[in-house]
Length: 221
Image (cartoon, rainbow, N blue to C red; front, side, top):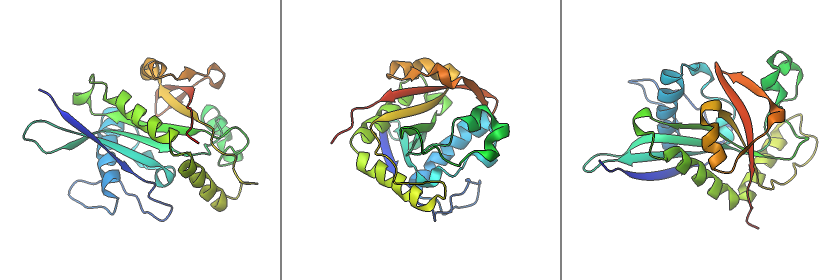
């Protein structure tokens, strides 16, 4: 049976937003789109992949853009079935992942290397996979980023203004995109133009092996 899909964006909720895990039978104060995103994220990452619920909402959620892809069948109400998150620069030092025992001695963010955005929390409900929806979400985020560099730079500047380890105004974002890909979807990202950076190695996140991949976008002036 055919489905109709729509995609909705949620701007960064902001540092004062008190984002919460959805709990059956209880409401939250989350923005509506973020609440839908969490429904998908909880089902995929927590219920299916057995990742920790306590780590599902992190510091990046408040400063990131979120997209929710909703699907509906004829005569049915749209339901959230896919999500993606775009985290603006800067990103934490990569060594915090590959050498977690040293993370406490590292700065919170890497301000030294070229700024990159990071696509994370990419998920599609199991019953909707095989339709190219994950690729559609990634492309949606990439297309948006390529034409919204000013908003991305402003998000980095706002963080720099609140962050004690930022020594100067962040460099402008020039189109570099990072994904930490689970190894079983590495080929999907390769098909979208991402290249695995072997120098980043492989590491474990929540019991799942990951690789780092980059792509550069042409950014609109």
